Length: 266
Image 1: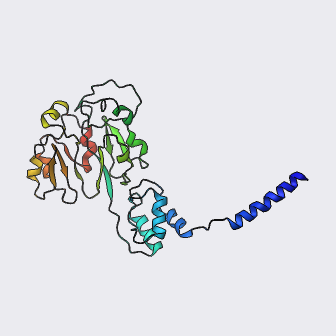
Image 2: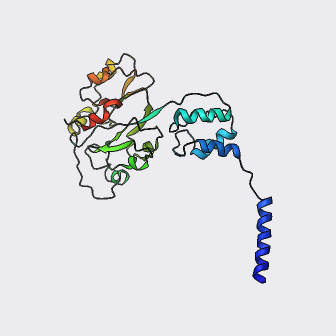
Image 3: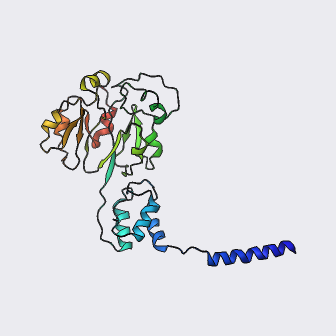
């Protein structure tokens, strides 16, 4: 009888609590959140899909085309539901700014510690002769939800068709080799070292030596040399490929042939 009485009281208390302390369901937020892919990558500029959905549902002026993994499909669905004008998503993709494959550079350390890029990076900035190079343990692969990355010949390679531009790999790389660029800009510099050209020639067969040939050749002012390293402005680049032809170390690539480039020997 005592147990039954306690159960009855507890049931009444829970019923009253459910009625008077319940939180109203935000159907607008839930609908928006259900449209988003749930990658929680932060590419939209918010902490994750939850925060982006909250801002879309209740804040003014938040654009519906910020989700790069969802692409135009998600942007269109969000625009329809929220009654906003539709804008195309600026498609992004990751690039790996390193060309130091196993046949082009050397390991100077027999590393046997934790098998991760972050762990290896603590030991004198990695096992390779170039302290700026890809460490090759695949920390970027582990965070990619779309299987867009692989390790080929010792360095990370991006599959541009599978990459959604979420940016998770950018955060995972301890050497900050991975960067984001627009899908319509396919030419990039496959090096991130700011060491002198003379030093680069000693440690890597395919590194940027800061010779400025690409900068002088580019008719669109898309290439600049800063701290011995060439960089390409995707807003100005027309993908003409002239910089690829004049680069003496062949360190400028196009995403259309990057896998073949990294597989090549010599």
